Image 1: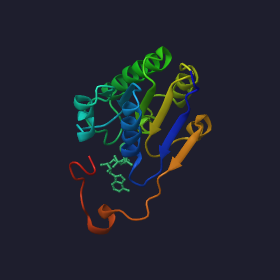
Image 2: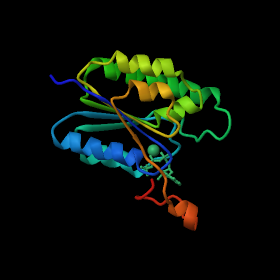
Image 3: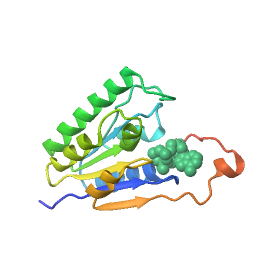
Image 4: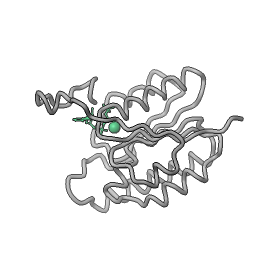
Length: 172
Ligand code: ATP
Ligand code: MG
């Protein structure tokens, strides 16, 4: 079995989550099994419906279902820790070939869990598992543990130039 690598898609430009889902589709089409855990997300993004169509992809929302505006509440922390524990087990088991930790950096940004725990969980994974982490504000430790790092750089965004808000099927 081939070694799995660790990807990090970060930066402020659009395209991190959609790149991860693009990779998930490619992997699933090749027969690989894909698990996608979405941390922190406050609403049902259209992409979670992918699992209704593609049988090799499982998507789970691991947040509390509410957006964290200021300081996180205990229930946000509890949900995130439970989600992290679930991902740890999935990574060790090798049950999935590709594991996507969507917005895991946002969990770190809000201090819902510690970076050491994320690093340890990735190091202890079954070595064949490919891991993709996404989200803004990735800490240095995640750059170090990753084999592939892509920073999406915002050059222009219709939200900034035209005030266009999040559109269903395009931005969420
Ligand atoms: P996407 O899910 O579209 O690939 P993303 O994962 O790169 O975006 P996030 O930081 O997760 O970006 O963004 C959360 C929401 O904000 C998404 O609806 C996304 O489309 C939108 N968004 C992403 N980048 C920007 C930006 N530079 N300015 C405004 N909105 C953005
Ligand atoms: Mg995203």
